[in-house]
Length: 385
Image (tube, rainbow, N blue to C red; front, side, top):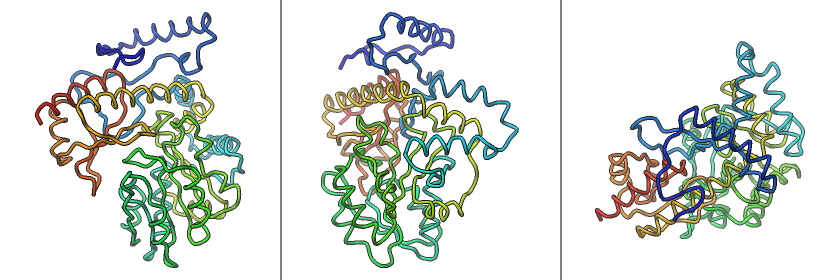
């Protein structure tokens, strides 16, 4: 599959000098091509593979970030590195998020990645034998943490189409249920539930338990506003919405995430805070939040990557779900540990097992070069039968 972003020939790694030369060329193009879409006007960025290191397609990272504006913000924040971030930076980020989401700052909790937000919620509602209802498989960050502090997790199988079975999940909600977890788009399946179905479920169940909606990948959708459950927070319902700067913003290493919920819920969760975000990450998040051109750029490049991966999977005959995230979930027909090792031997790291779907594989969308390496490895693997 050939496209302007994914030509058949693998793209060579860029040196720093080449990167700036291309960035300068892109800037020059802006002056003569104002009609181009916003994402295409951003300078080409992306992680450069070093030497013979393996291609890392196992953690759903965005290889195109941080954005140029986020990098500049981090550099400018070096003088703040001697200060704790809550002395001004975190408050500034909270204010920016609150403005964007149409809530007060008291509705916002910033954490060290959405991972800390998930852990805080797992502790808040899982301590002393609290019960949690969740799909299976789904993202395990909160669930395993909650089990570690004594929670009981009711895992409800996905439908045959690998989407949330909201009917079955609602049946599992009892008076002992304290939290219901919904990851949408879902990780690892990359599937998404219709907004009306999610909203109806949240409205119904939130009268009986708190509903936690993990929207880590929602900004990768063409129309995230149609899928978010933020409006239920506006209505004062028992709903928590979590977001992260690790995906579309490309700030996974900076560990910045946040939750939106009613102020009393935020205060309850915040009591279990485990750390504080770093000031460089906070400043980068503020800049990236405003950099809508880079967000559009990332969204478009990742969409190109999904199409490329799907084409290769079609070529080798592997079926896959329709992805709404920065990864693709496909059926290998062999135990995932075996498939992992084969791909690793060929220089590509893919994701861990996701019980009970132990012959499926999750692969992240990488750069052009990384996906070319993945395609070569996959073809080799498939040819071995």
